[in-house]
Each structure stands twice: as structure tokens, then as C-alpha cells.
Length: 104
Image 1 (cartoon, helix red, strand yellow):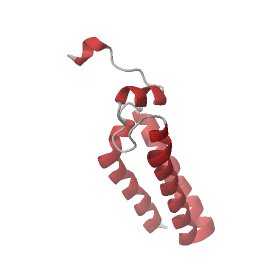
Image 2 (cartoon, helix red, strand yellow; image 1 turned 90 degrees about the vertical axis):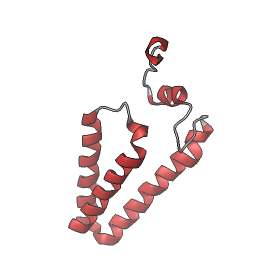
Image 3 (cartoon, helix red, strand yellow; image 1 turned 180 degrees about the vertical axis):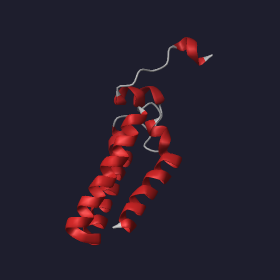
Image 4 (cartoon, helix red, strand yellow; image 1 turned 60 degrees about the horizontal axis):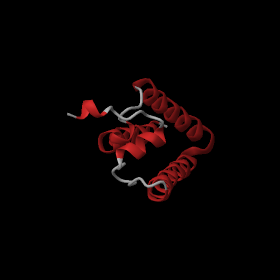
């Protein structure tokens, strides 16, 4: 089971390094909770379905990410790779944009 946990942790590490700009305003506790939940799901899925079940789960999760970034975000006027325009992305996430005076 350690192998599957390592793969999930690696995905999170690489994701935060390369795609952390998508979660720039998310609270740290939420990021930590997300990691704990996915490690927990990894353990449960691997325990009950084995390595094959884990890789099916991982494939489904990657497919969902692809759908969101390649179809749903562009459909809402947001670049699925860069998250621009930032104002639209922040609005979609429910985050407040910075006041004009802070942009100086």
C-alpha cells in the first residue's frame, strides 16, 4: 500500500509546485484537509480493491481534472492552463479581487 500512497503524495507535491496558482487564495487548512482526504481514499481503495482499483481511481480523477481544465473553464471564459483572466477566475471561485489601490 505504501506504493500507492507514495504515488498520491507525489501527485500532490508536483501539483502544488506546478499548479499551485489555481489555489493561491485557498486557506492552508483546506489544502491540508484535501491531502489527508485523498491519502485516506487511497488507503481505503487500495485496501478493498487492490492496486488495480487505485489506478482506476487515479485515472478517473485525472479525467475529471482534464474535463474541468479543458472544457468547463474555457466554457466560462477562463483559460484552463493559466487561470486568466484572474478576475473571472476569482469570481468563479468566490474570491474577492484586490481593490484597485493595491495594484500600484
